[in-house]
Length: 283
Length: 202
Image (cartoon, rainbow over all chains, first blue to last red; front, side, top):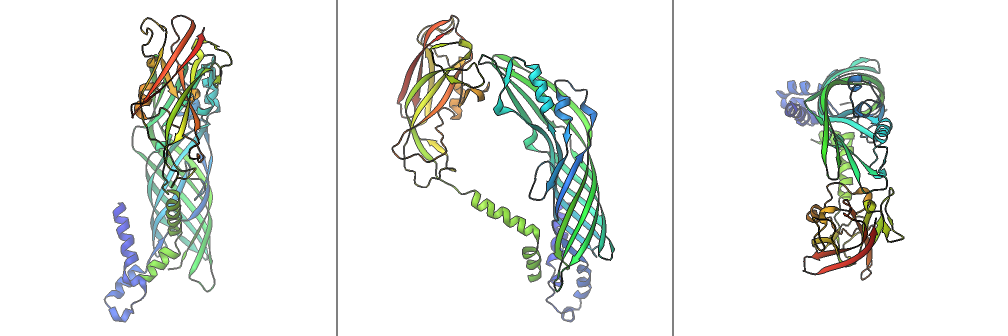
């Protein structure tokens, strides 16, 4: 699929007709192809700032060992291109429009959420009352972040200089490598003994995300120039069914390690609203 | 092709973003030579680790279950600083540590009489608060974690500096009382440094 998109893109971009350097009359057989390829427009990234609002899901509220607190209290997040490449970002690396109306596009993107660790830290401190939580290993957040490529179709509805653009997208994501392990170290008061408390997250299946987005924008044409600017607002909804496993382990010096595993499935859902802008040539 | 170049290279935000990463990568990945150093001396200190952070003990009486030893190494550049950069160069111990043994001059317990290695009773770390269950002396020796003489500035040639690691006692002795520990470190050139420290564990 990706190779096909690249092939279509390159074919459209590299065709001599796009260079506008050859008179039509000199290559009459190409006229038909020229008019066909002139219908296509390559578009590149937009710049945006987006506010993501994850939907709280109670799928793990019954979990023991503090995992309800580790996974539940999800935080909203603001993301902007080149500003906050965190759990949520979206970078459109390719888009091809036909007659500036129908388009196919692809994004490098991620979705996910942070969970505040205050409740979980309090749970652990209550569990180990005679121990000090080592400050150097204190975790403020846990992150659940999936990243990958997503593909979509888009349709532009023009009205004067305004554009209404609904988009449908499907993503193929995997769990980020930086979200798989959280270690706490509790030192016994008055002693060298300590407890290592670990939480490891693993994806146990393929993750696909499904998104519906709506863009509303106005175009501004720059006088005596072939360039134009598109500025607008956007809103969207995403859900992504996924399955995970969390392994909680505790280890002390000279004592065998104990582990507890939790498995769950849920649909990660997030709403987002934002501003976006694009800059490109008319042709 | 001119149109393509103009569109993609000059007017595409994607190209600008790519250029940004290329420029950052070019300047951010410059290679600098590591500092080469060797360990010339070892001095031991008794440490009280009963609190969150370890402190050098003011008296030789320490609770056995909170006892640790601070190993203070004297480091010295073994080569030139040419081609190095203070904040980006790594450190290279030229005379590798090949052996590390700690023992007691008197019997520690039934399975560890005087002179027998106590390596399995200690954990090794750059600070006691970061010692993990996997920081055994054998593992740290194999991984090259023994005596990493890191510093974040440029050492002057011919000017020694100090760096410290810790040995944390995880298994108290069978009987409390005065005790002397000996630590011997061997290097790749078959030289050794050693020091002894006395403490009363109770």
